[in-house]
Length: 339
Ligand code: PEP
Ligand code: MN
Image (cartoon, rainbow, N blue to C red; front, side, top):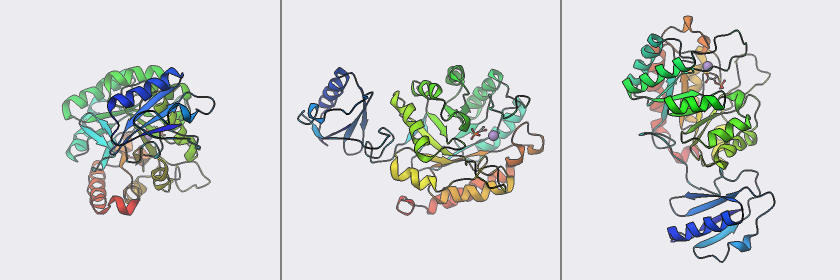
Protein backbone atom coordinates (compact mmCIF):
# COMPACT_ATOMS: atom_id res chain seq x y z
CA UNK A 1 0.00 0.00 0.00
CA UNK A 2 1.11 3.46 -0.86
CA UNK A 3 -0.52 6.60 0.50
CA UNK A 4 -0.29 9.62 -1.77
CA UNK A 5 -0.82 12.89 0.09
CA UNK A 6 -2.43 15.93 -1.51
CA UNK A 7 0.03 18.50 -2.78
CA UNK A 8 -1.13 20.94 -0.09
CA UNK A 9 -1.10 18.39 2.75
CA UNK A 10 0.48 19.75 5.90
CA UNK A 11 3.33 18.18 7.81
CA UNK A 12 0.95 17.43 10.66
CA UNK A 13 -1.33 15.53 8.27
CA UNK A 14 1.62 13.48 7.02
CA UNK A 15 2.63 12.76 10.61
CA UNK A 16 -0.82 11.66 11.56
CA UNK A 17 -0.95 9.18 8.64
CA UNK A 18 2.47 7.87 9.73
CA UNK A 19 1.16 7.42 13.27
CA UNK A 20 -1.85 5.46 12.09
CA UNK A 21 0.34 3.18 9.98
CA UNK A 22 2.55 2.52 12.99
CA UNK A 23 -0.44 1.90 15.25
CA UNK A 24 -1.53 -0.80 12.83
CA UNK A 25 1.87 -2.45 13.42
CA UNK A 26 3.40 -1.53 10.06
CA UNK A 27 6.40 0.58 9.10
CA UNK A 28 5.83 3.95 7.42
CA UNK A 29 8.25 5.37 4.85
CA UNK A 30 7.40 8.99 4.07
CA UNK A 31 9.04 10.19 0.84
CA UNK A 32 8.75 13.91 0.25
CA UNK A 33 8.76 14.73 -3.46
CA UNK A 34 8.75 17.80 -5.65
CA UNK A 35 4.98 17.99 -5.88
CA UNK A 36 3.67 15.75 -3.10
CA UNK A 37 4.66 13.40 -0.31
CA UNK A 38 3.95 9.70 -0.64
CA UNK A 39 4.13 7.26 2.26
CA UNK A 40 5.13 3.66 1.61
CA UNK A 41 3.89 0.96 3.97
CA UNK A 42 5.98 -2.13 4.68
CA UNK A 43 5.88 -4.85 7.29
CA UNK A 44 2.45 -6.12 6.30
CA UNK A 45 2.13 -9.84 5.51
CA UNK A 46 -1.30 -9.48 3.99
CA UNK A 47 -2.82 -6.60 2.08
CA UNK A 48 -3.55 -3.39 3.96
CA UNK A 49 -7.12 -2.14 4.04
CA UNK A 50 -7.27 1.14 2.09
CA UNK A 51 -10.30 2.28 4.06
CA UNK A 52 -8.03 3.04 7.03
CA UNK A 53 -6.57 5.92 5.08
CA UNK A 54 -8.81 7.10 2.27
CA UNK A 55 -10.79 9.60 4.31
CA UNK A 56 -7.98 11.01 6.41
CA UNK A 57 -7.28 14.72 6.06
CA UNK A 58 -4.60 15.45 3.47
CA UNK A 59 -4.78 12.02 1.79
CA UNK A 60 -5.24 12.09 -1.99
CA UNK A 61 -5.37 8.33 -2.53
CA UNK A 62 -4.37 4.96 -1.16
CA UNK A 63 -2.90 2.80 -3.90
CA UNK A 64 -2.45 -0.96 -3.75
CA UNK A 65 1.03 -1.91 -4.96
CA UNK A 66 0.96 -5.03 -7.09
CA UNK A 67 4.69 -5.17 -7.82
CA UNK A 68 7.06 -6.96 -5.44
CA UNK A 69 8.95 -3.74 -4.69
CA UNK A 70 7.50 -0.67 -3.11
CA UNK A 71 10.13 1.76 -1.93
CA UNK A 72 12.43 1.71 -4.96
CA UNK A 73 9.49 2.36 -7.22
CA UNK A 74 8.59 5.40 -9.27
CA UNK A 75 5.05 5.01 -7.93
CA UNK A 76 6.35 6.11 -4.55
CA UNK A 77 8.64 8.80 -5.87
CA UNK A 78 8.13 9.94 -9.46
CA UNK A 79 11.24 12.12 -9.54
CA UNK A 80 14.81 10.83 -9.41
CA UNK A 81 16.50 10.47 -6.06
CA UNK A 82 19.71 12.40 -5.60
CA UNK A 83 21.93 10.53 -3.16
CA UNK A 84 23.99 12.98 -1.16
CA UNK A 85 27.43 12.05 0.06
CA UNK A 86 28.49 15.01 2.15
CA UNK A 87 28.74 17.91 -0.27
CA UNK A 88 28.93 15.59 -3.28
CA UNK A 89 26.00 13.82 -4.92
CA UNK A 90 25.06 10.95 -7.21
CA UNK A 91 21.95 11.26 -9.36
CA UNK A 92 21.99 15.03 -9.78
CA UNK A 93 23.01 17.04 -12.82
CA UNK A 94 26.69 16.28 -12.46
CA UNK A 95 28.15 12.99 -13.69
CA UNK A 96 29.51 11.19 -10.63
CA UNK A 97 32.96 9.68 -11.02
CA UNK A 98 34.23 7.19 -8.46
CA UNK A 99 37.80 6.18 -9.23
CA UNK A 100 40.70 4.45 -7.56
CA UNK A 101 42.46 1.12 -7.29
CA UNK A 102 40.74 -2.22 -6.85
CA UNK A 103 42.53 -2.61 -3.51
CA UNK A 104 44.46 -0.32 -1.21
CA UNK A 105 47.91 -1.87 -1.34
CA UNK A 106 50.09 0.70 0.39
CA UNK A 107 50.01 4.32 1.48
CA UNK A 108 52.22 5.45 -1.41
CA UNK A 109 50.18 3.56 -4.03
CA UNK A 110 46.88 4.92 -2.72
CA UNK A 111 48.13 8.50 -2.47
CA UNK A 112 49.68 8.47 -5.95
CA UNK A 113 46.35 7.37 -7.42
CA UNK A 114 44.25 9.67 -5.24
CA UNK A 115 46.28 12.66 -6.37
CA UNK A 116 45.36 11.92 -10.01
CA UNK A 117 41.73 11.27 -9.11
CA UNK A 118 41.55 14.59 -7.32
CA UNK A 119 43.20 16.36 -10.24
CA UNK A 120 40.60 14.95 -12.63
CA UNK A 121 37.84 16.72 -10.71
CA UNK A 122 36.20 13.46 -9.56
CA UNK A 123 34.58 13.72 -6.14
CA UNK A 124 34.85 10.08 -5.07
CA UNK A 125 37.76 7.74 -4.35
CA UNK A 126 37.30 3.98 -4.36
CA UNK A 127 39.57 1.28 -2.98
CA UNK A 128 39.00 -1.97 -1.16
CA UNK A 129 40.43 -2.60 2.29
CA UNK A 130 38.54 -5.89 2.46
CA UNK A 131 38.52 -7.79 -0.83
CA UNK A 132 36.13 -10.60 -1.74
CA UNK A 133 38.63 -12.79 -3.61
CA UNK A 134 37.74 -15.97 -5.42
CA UNK A 135 40.78 -17.73 -3.93
CA UNK A 136 41.43 -17.68 -0.19
CA UNK A 137 45.15 -17.48 -1.01
CA UNK A 138 44.87 -14.27 -3.05
CA UNK A 139 45.55 -10.83 -1.50
CA UNK A 140 42.62 -10.12 0.82
CA UNK A 141 43.24 -6.42 1.40
CA UNK A 142 45.00 -4.50 4.17
CA UNK A 143 41.98 -4.53 6.46
CA UNK A 144 41.67 -1.71 8.95
CA UNK A 145 45.08 -0.33 7.95
CA UNK A 146 43.60 0.16 4.46
CA UNK A 147 40.67 2.04 5.96
CA UNK A 148 43.06 4.32 7.85
CA UNK A 149 44.85 5.12 4.58
CA UNK A 150 41.49 5.90 2.98
CA UNK A 151 40.56 8.20 5.85
CA UNK A 152 43.86 10.05 5.34
CA UNK A 153 43.10 10.41 1.64
CA UNK A 154 39.75 11.93 2.50
CA UNK A 155 41.52 14.34 4.83
CA UNK A 156 44.23 15.28 2.31
CA UNK A 157 42.23 15.52 -0.91
CA UNK A 158 38.65 16.06 0.24
CA UNK A 159 37.57 13.03 -1.79
CA UNK A 160 34.58 11.00 -0.60
CA UNK A 161 35.57 7.45 0.27
CA UNK A 162 33.67 4.53 -1.26
CA UNK A 163 34.78 1.16 0.09
CA UNK A 164 33.40 -2.33 0.44
CA UNK A 165 32.07 -3.98 3.58
CA UNK A 166 32.13 -7.77 3.36
CA UNK A 167 30.15 -8.42 6.51
CA UNK A 168 28.26 -6.67 9.27
CA UNK A 169 31.38 -6.00 11.29
CA UNK A 170 32.85 -4.46 8.14
CA UNK A 171 29.96 -2.00 8.03
CA UNK A 172 30.82 -0.82 11.55
CA UNK A 173 34.37 -0.19 10.37
CA UNK A 174 33.46 1.56 7.10
CA UNK A 175 31.10 3.77 9.07
CA UNK A 176 34.09 4.89 11.08
CA UNK A 177 36.42 5.66 8.16
CA UNK A 178 34.40 6.02 4.94
CA UNK A 179 31.61 7.97 3.28
CA UNK A 180 29.77 5.34 1.27
CA UNK A 181 29.45 1.59 1.80
CA UNK A 182 29.88 -0.71 -1.18
CA UNK A 183 27.97 -3.99 -1.10
CA UNK A 184 29.76 -6.19 -3.62
CA UNK A 185 28.28 -8.38 -6.32
CA UNK A 186 28.91 -11.54 -4.29
CA UNK A 187 26.97 -10.12 -1.37
CA UNK A 188 24.00 -8.71 -3.26
CA UNK A 189 21.70 -11.28 -1.69
CA UNK A 190 23.36 -11.41 1.72
CA UNK A 191 20.13 -10.41 3.38
CA UNK A 192 21.46 -9.87 6.90
CA UNK A 193 24.16 -7.61 5.45
CA UNK A 194 21.54 -5.71 3.44
CA UNK A 195 19.43 -5.21 6.55
CA UNK A 196 22.45 -3.94 8.47
CA UNK A 197 23.20 -1.55 5.57
CA UNK A 198 19.63 -0.37 5.88
CA UNK A 199 20.33 0.73 9.43
CA UNK A 200 23.41 2.71 8.46
CA UNK A 201 23.46 6.47 8.14
CA UNK A 202 25.90 6.16 5.20
CA UNK A 203 24.71 5.82 1.60
CA UNK A 204 24.99 2.39 -0.01
CA UNK A 205 26.49 1.44 -3.38
CA UNK A 206 24.73 -1.78 -4.31
CA UNK A 207 26.41 -3.77 -7.04
CA UNK A 208 24.40 -6.12 -9.17
CA UNK A 209 24.95 -9.80 -8.35
CA UNK A 210 26.83 -11.96 -10.83
CA UNK A 211 23.67 -13.71 -11.92
CA UNK A 212 21.01 -11.38 -10.58
CA UNK A 213 17.91 -10.54 -12.54
CA UNK A 214 16.67 -6.97 -12.54
CA UNK A 215 13.97 -7.87 -10.02
CA UNK A 216 16.43 -9.55 -7.66
CA UNK A 217 18.72 -6.54 -7.80
CA UNK A 218 15.89 -4.09 -7.14
CA UNK A 219 14.60 -6.24 -4.30
CA UNK A 220 18.07 -6.20 -2.75
CA UNK A 221 17.83 -2.38 -2.79
CA UNK A 222 14.36 -2.76 -1.31
CA UNK A 223 15.87 -4.69 1.63
CA UNK A 224 18.15 -1.75 2.42
CA UNK A 225 15.38 0.80 2.04
CA UNK A 226 12.85 -1.19 4.05
CA UNK A 227 15.13 -0.68 7.07
CA UNK A 228 14.97 3.09 6.61
CA UNK A 229 18.11 3.88 4.57
CA UNK A 230 16.84 5.45 1.35
CA UNK A 231 20.29 6.53 0.14
CA UNK A 232 20.96 3.69 -2.30
CA UNK A 233 22.86 3.83 -5.60
CA UNK A 234 22.64 0.86 -7.94
CA UNK A 235 25.72 -0.26 -9.86
CA UNK A 236 25.68 -2.34 -13.05
CA UNK A 237 28.96 -4.29 -13.03
CA UNK A 238 28.28 -7.02 -15.55
CA UNK A 239 26.82 -10.48 -15.20
CA UNK A 240 27.98 -13.97 -15.98
CA UNK A 241 27.08 -15.24 -19.44
CA UNK A 242 28.57 -17.66 -21.97
CA UNK A 243 30.72 -14.87 -23.47
CA UNK A 244 34.43 -15.53 -23.15
CA UNK A 245 35.81 -12.30 -24.59
CA UNK A 246 35.08 -10.39 -21.39
CA UNK A 247 35.30 -11.11 -17.66
CA UNK A 248 31.61 -10.27 -17.32
CA UNK A 249 28.97 -9.15 -19.80
CA UNK A 250 28.20 -5.51 -19.10
CA UNK A 251 24.43 -5.32 -19.40
CA UNK A 252 23.94 -1.68 -20.34
CA UNK A 253 20.29 -2.28 -21.12
CA UNK A 254 19.78 -2.50 -17.37
CA UNK A 255 20.27 1.26 -17.11
CA UNK A 256 17.10 2.26 -19.00
CA UNK A 257 15.38 -0.78 -17.47
CA UNK A 258 16.11 0.49 -13.94
CA UNK A 259 15.06 4.01 -14.95
CA UNK A 260 11.67 2.79 -16.05
CA UNK A 261 10.94 1.28 -12.64
CA UNK A 262 12.97 3.12 -10.06
CA UNK A 263 13.84 6.57 -8.82
CA UNK A 264 17.24 5.38 -7.57
CA UNK A 265 20.44 6.54 -9.27
CA UNK A 266 22.31 3.92 -11.26
CA UNK A 267 25.98 3.92 -12.23
CA UNK A 268 28.15 1.70 -14.43
CA UNK A 269 31.34 -0.21 -13.58
CA UNK A 270 33.13 -0.73 -16.91
CA UNK A 271 36.16 -2.22 -15.11
CA UNK A 272 34.57 -5.37 -13.66
CA UNK A 273 32.09 -5.18 -16.52
CA UNK A 274 34.81 -6.03 -19.04
CA UNK A 275 37.90 -7.10 -17.11
CA UNK A 276 40.10 -5.74 -19.86
CA UNK A 277 41.99 -2.47 -19.87
CA UNK A 278 41.34 -1.73 -23.55
CA UNK A 279 37.59 -2.15 -23.17
CA UNK A 280 37.11 0.06 -20.13
CA UNK A 281 37.03 3.45 -21.84
CA UNK A 282 34.73 2.41 -24.72
CA UNK A 283 32.25 0.86 -22.28
CA UNK A 284 32.50 3.86 -19.96
CA UNK A 285 31.55 6.08 -22.88
CA UNK A 286 28.64 3.78 -23.66
CA UNK A 287 27.51 3.73 -20.04
CA UNK A 288 27.31 7.49 -19.92
CA UNK A 289 25.64 7.62 -23.32
CA UNK A 290 22.95 5.22 -22.16
CA UNK A 291 22.14 7.50 -19.24
CA UNK A 292 24.11 6.31 -16.21
CA UNK A 293 24.37 8.77 -13.34
CA UNK A 294 28.03 8.00 -12.94
CA UNK A 295 30.90 5.57 -13.30
CA UNK A 296 33.06 3.57 -10.93
CA UNK A 297 36.44 2.91 -12.52
CA UNK A 298 39.58 1.11 -11.40
CA UNK A 299 42.81 3.06 -11.82
CA UNK A 300 46.36 2.16 -10.84
CA UNK A 301 49.67 3.99 -10.99
CA UNK A 302 51.39 0.68 -11.88
CA UNK A 303 48.77 -1.75 -13.20
CA UNK A 304 51.42 -4.36 -14.01
CA UNK A 305 52.22 -4.62 -10.29
CA UNK A 306 48.64 -4.44 -8.97
CA UNK A 307 47.80 -7.02 -6.29
CA UNK A 308 44.29 -7.43 -7.68
CA UNK A 309 42.48 -6.71 -10.96
CA UNK A 310 45.56 -5.28 -12.71
CA UNK A 311 44.33 -6.41 -16.13
CA UNK A 312 41.37 -4.05 -16.00
CA UNK A 313 43.07 -1.10 -14.30
CA UNK A 314 43.52 2.08 -16.30
CA UNK A 315 46.85 3.86 -16.12
CA UNK A 316 46.73 7.41 -14.79
CA UNK A 317 46.96 9.01 -18.26
CA UNK A 318 44.29 6.64 -19.62
CA UNK A 319 42.05 7.58 -16.72
CA UNK A 320 42.53 11.27 -17.34
CA UNK A 321 41.54 10.78 -20.99
CA UNK A 322 38.47 8.76 -19.97
CA UNK A 323 37.26 11.53 -17.69
CA UNK A 324 37.47 14.17 -20.39
CA UNK A 325 35.71 11.92 -22.91
CA UNK A 326 32.84 10.91 -20.65
CA UNK A 327 32.32 14.48 -19.47
CA UNK A 328 31.97 15.57 -23.10
CA UNK A 329 29.41 12.83 -23.71
CA UNK A 330 27.51 13.67 -20.55
CA UNK A 331 27.25 17.27 -21.63
CA UNK A 332 25.36 16.39 -24.80
CA UNK A 333 23.05 13.93 -23.06
CA UNK A 334 19.83 15.45 -21.82
CA UNK A 335 17.28 13.68 -19.62
CA UNK A 336 14.86 13.72 -22.54
CA UNK A 337 17.16 11.60 -24.71
CA UNK A 338 17.91 8.96 -22.10
CA UNK A 339 14.27 8.66 -20.97
C1 PEP B 1 35.39 -4.28 -6.65
O1 PEP B 1 34.72 -3.24 -6.78
O2 PEP B 1 36.63 -4.31 -6.60
C2 PEP B 1 34.64 -5.56 -6.63
C3 PEP B 1 35.13 -6.63 -6.03
O3 PEP B 1 33.47 -5.48 -7.29
P1 PEP B 1 32.34 -6.60 -7.58
O4 PEP B 1 31.68 -6.86 -6.27
O5 PEP B 1 31.47 -5.92 -8.58
O6 PEP B 1 33.04 -7.80 -8.15
MN1 MN C 1 38.25 -4.99 -8.44
